[in-house]
Length: 198
Image (tube, rainbow, N blue to C red; front, side, top):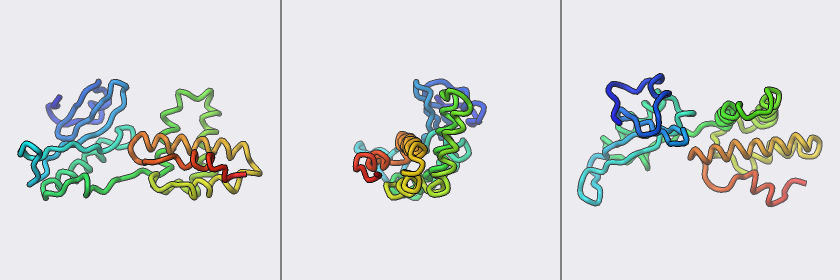
């Protein structure tokens, strides 16, 4: 539905399933998952019927991308389209860091922890052994060597901690893939399958 006036933070938090927007759209799935979409008309490009090429672009999940960030990206995409550039090939994708995704996963899973201590342990393992090495890296640039950098130093002396760390890194990378920030096999799975760690 088109909204009268602008999408506001308060308004978008209370919208039900459907597509809501004012040029920038918030798509709410029946599952409750929310993502931003912008619809643009690319200048000079036509669809197969000869009409102007109208295209939708995903701007990220509403749990990670704020309303203001979505507006900025939507504006960037519209400006490209006005110049005849298709945003699909020209957009600068803003990929979150490993730490940003991990913190979001931790928040999302809070209701599922057995207790507060368990929840704290989950993020503390990542804070102590992963964030110093890969925390600031874009989540799409983490592969086997980066995961090994975290696991190798503690694999034999703190095996249980290392095993938990590998599970947690895997979850963060799986969530990042589910949100469209990564593709391909999870490097943690590849390391396990190759049995490269003793």
